[in-house]
Image (cartoon, rainbow, N blue to C red; front, side, top):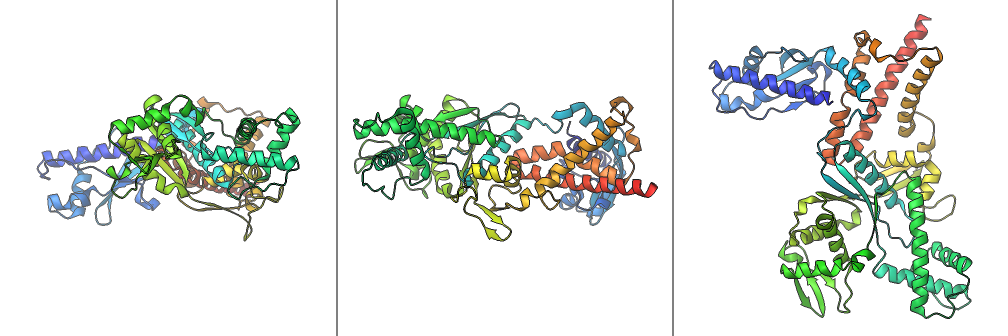
Length: 530
């Protein structure tokens, strides 16, 4: 149950009914009642909720807003509500103060809903896909993938709590130029290991993992590549290395707390014929033309600011863009997702408009495709920027980060700010067990609650819901903590609507802060009594 929403509905209802009475008695001359905006005042002294409806009605009624507010207040009926009193304040704001029973209701709801407390249903079962990370399987996952993983997985979990039917998907780029380059890199490393004096081109993959994959192949299969053609050798090496890399990705993501529902392979779009089927669909709709032997998508027909893009090169090979269009068409038309959310790096900014244009060309509402662009991550120790792993002396990868600070700290820190904001993580700070560490700060609040329950249990005291006397909660810090607890469903709803998990993280930090202050005061009072 969303008690904040219930309270806002009660405020709106009593205001509407009061205005209707003002109209019926001739105090107001109105044809209709405008939308009533309800907000939470910044100052506690201004009540629990407030509305500026009197100011909004000033022009229509040609009256002073305080006078309008007073007329509304005079006609308000608070029976059968949680509202205790109403006041007119400032230039004409109407402030609402709620009874303690409203706060006490939070205890009843939390205990009855248990682990489901906070869940809302704004999604109504709509099918949503969240596609995230989708790292190139030719090498280890990096910091961008680490942030994308935390953002995507937590967003998917948030949307589930908001009533959506969510699928988490990883798109495996196992076709196209990068795989050709991957095969070339593997074969050259193989030939070098066999003693050939041959250089690895600059545009190939130079990571140590390429050498590791070749060595692993030789350990498992011996030298069965020696008498094969270059193409056959590359295929065997690619098949082996891709499988090994994808298994490593799954293992590392699992350590990060991420389990995908679907691992979708780009190669399947070629095997099923969907890439060429999609291109034919665009052709039939009049969104392609031929030039210089290549087939082009007329993006400019959708948006004049966009440049046209190649779908099929002059050599007859489809581009990555063509496969990506087919992939998104598959999401919407083949699998029937209502909403598709992609999480991409900020460097993909220019690709967003092109992909939305392609969806529109296919007759798919581009508003159903939501792309979240995430900004860069900076790791520091104190004031020094960190670029290399202590363990390997190389660029920090996802698994390095997990090994160093743990998955919980990484996931939490990546969600302390919205995706469109640059983020900095102090590796030393997030591993300290001090209240300066925001991760520990929230974890310690949980630990303290568990400690209280454990201490009660050791004294033989068992929580009996039927014997709880909520009316004993009278102190301001107790009531403020209850107020914060009942905000959770509303926070979940707003965060889900804005696709912003950081709102929930900030809520947790605020709640932890209030809880620590509450417990510290309680402990101090006990010491003074003793």
